[in-house]
Figure 1 (spheres, helix red, strand yellow):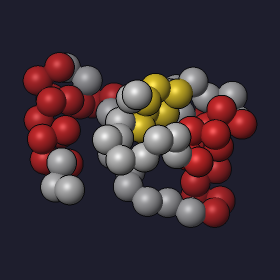
Figure 2: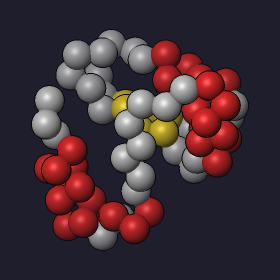
Figure 3: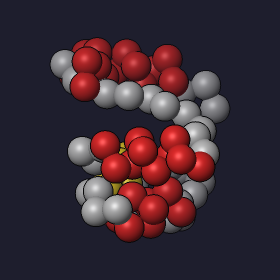
Figure 4: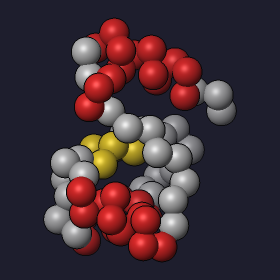
Length: 68
C-alpha cells in the first residue's frame, strides 16, 4: 500500500526510529529467530482481522499490538 515511507517518518518524528525495525516478509528459521528476539510485535492493519503472525508471536511469548 506504499505506507512504509510514512511509517518511517512517523517513527522518526516519534523518536523511536532507532528502535523500530520494518522487516517485511520473512520465513522459516529467520522468522522464528526474529520473533524470539522481539520485544513486541506490532501489526496495524485495516484489512486483516487477526493475522497468524500475532499468534506466532504469542506462541513464543512476545507481546502483540494490533488494531481493531
